[in-house]
Figure 1 (cartoon, rainbow over the protein chains, first blue to last red):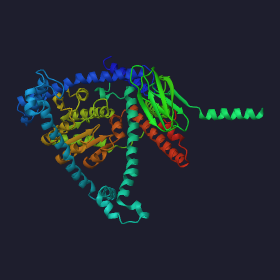
Figure 2 (cartoon, each protein chain N blue to C red; figure 1 turned 90 degrees about the vertical axis):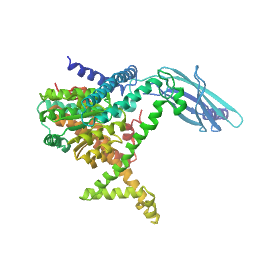
Figure 3 (cartoon, rainbow over the protein chains, first blue to last red; figure 1 turned 90 degrees about the horizontal axis):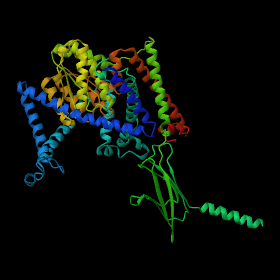
Figure 4 (cartoon, each protein chain N blue to C red; figure 1 turned 180 degrees about the vertical axis):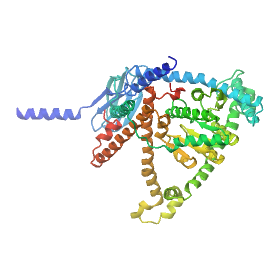
Length: 232
Length: 365
């Protein structure tokens, strides 16, 4: 029963959600909304599990002074600090246990939680995101090294798109007569993005869609069980 | 007498032509949340204004235009409610007010989704047929998927080097089918890792994924008969924040130097940051996602990439279960149907007939 109950539940819920896609009448919409609500409630409880896991793992590494335990200590202090500031003085419009921290707000210009969020968290997040620019450059360099026909084609296509999307593309081919306007770099870049690129992306999306149908059907029918932890 | 009759008919015809009509009707084949408004008034009108006049709400202008005839769909209404509408037409030196009302009703079928339903039934029917055929012992040829065949190689390399394996189940929650597909792959991978006695690290972005991943890895170790080697702390929660999660994983890659990295599931802007860092550490990398925009990044930076449907086929491919392999044949049948529909659609579009496109897109209701 322990192993078959989730399968029965997955089958019933799967069929209801599938039917609701085609039946707009009550009670299908309401059932799906309720199920979504249940998911949110379960997620809410699961957050606690996540926090417990976080604290336990970091504490274990700090207590046993494992490699790089200092990083874990920094992580735990940051977690505890933000939690404490949020609980004590709240954030934005929401007051905390000790109220709105009017005195601190007069000094910092905003609540302590918001201050740290805007001046520590956001810059750190943006810094990490900005690394993408360098990673794109290094990955592109590797991708464009000519090794064979495919990488050659890839490099030529990429150069056309890069030049076509910058002002230099217009400058280089701007002198071409109107009858050859297709060969203008910006037009060539648009053509590549609009037709070959879109066609390839749609092929991937269609096949992924079929994969999703197959996977969902296997889960609904209980053929696929490994996501539950076991095959039996 | 005949002359009088003709004049009368002419007057009636003119009257009919000049008749001002405004009607409201529940939209057919929908969820009861919209009403169709149709109007036809004298072409002399300068401006037409349509408002919704509800009893307990202030008058709300829905549309202002100068078209003497037209239609409008009022959306986001409540099912089984009566709605009152007013059309006000402004003429050079006069104005005209017409009223109409209708009740929203939910129907039992979205007619616009008929094409989608038929396609779904066809694909599901094919999948079920091939599963049934596999149950009766029919064997199917499944093409090799290099990314999945390389799993053994990756685990072997990690075992030889005595380094761990890093498995990232995407950055989406459990309600994303890609995460579910990722967990099914994790189940097979963890079992092999347990057999080889290789450590597997699974950082999770969401608590729900954490709970499922813990269970999946534990059961895999149990199945391999190595429950004693299972370390619950190796499957852990990092953070809900996208770039915080990436920073955490990058840190693990740089400090622990895993011999093999697996990025399976749903990925967004962080895909390249993860895969490039992994590349820099020299790990053998396998990625799989159905996010078309992230695939180029993975293709460039990873040794093997599962593209789109390969991610969903992975579990069936790895399990070698005939029933699951049968379902993969169903996917192939679906692809054949779609290829035929695309060819047919192109031919019909060239012939300037768009019925098939409208039927599939749900424009016919």
